[in-house]
Image (cartoon, rainbow over the protein chains, first blue to last red):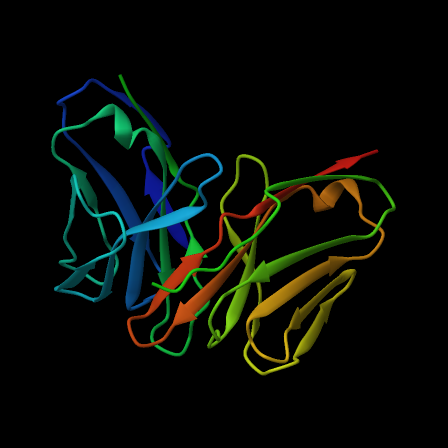
Length: 113
Length: 111
């Protein structure tokens, strides 16, 4: 199993541009999550999904959108990039409720200039 | 919402020294998880504690959940350079299937 994969690894965006961060897991996990990590700030939850077709906001959802059309994929969309979205983005998955270990992808480093 | 606090954010030790860090909450925690993130890497699950007073060991790492379930500790015996990284505690809330992370403590080890 590849686990959780994320693409791209690194991206530079101009202010106002849009992009989609891809996340795929091959472990048949129901639950998937998007976090952002800023220096000294820990991990903040952006959006999460408990199954295909179901998504919900986390702590910092503004400026982002997600979709979950399949169990495997959970893309994160930035519509109008802003410098405040410069961060490292991690996708994670877990088997489901009461199976709480989260498995993280390698991350996407995003720089908005 | 529920918050878990980790202070300080940085600690430097000499290789071979012991290291202890704490995770604190003002309210009772349902459980606590610990993750480790190596420099440039991603968080990796280490352990979960659920019961009051629970102690779990992984080689040189000892994890403890407080009796009142308001704090947890991670103790590393005889640190090695491979212990370098950021250690996060997090509470899992089963009701909405989310983890709330502390800000982490970054450990550096002088060889």
